[in-house]
Length: 153
Image (cartoon, rainbow, N blue to C red):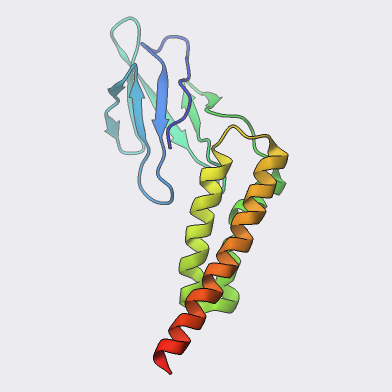
């Protein structure tokens, strides 16, 4: 998922961050050119031909990371309420009743909710969509569990 272009004073172009759904480092581009990563930091080109170090930080269940440039944090998207963050993680609770199968289906539900959270819908519509994803994950989990039970019997 790509963020909207973010303009930071002194940086040679708009910053775009491509985030991964669960694991891996985000890819950072400045003006469409990939920024080299050194450890946990990114070297962003500046307008005067130098580079400035930037750090990308992600918060659990938030699809929009924060970029820190020269000690100043820049959010790459709108803030998300605690209620929506809880809804994002809700499908993972299937592991409590569904074991490994519930966890796998729950992870897919969390991924779907993160995709919903990254859209431009209003918070109320996002909440309804995330509740729908939660109900859908339970239905998928039940259908797969019944099919596996019938196949193994």
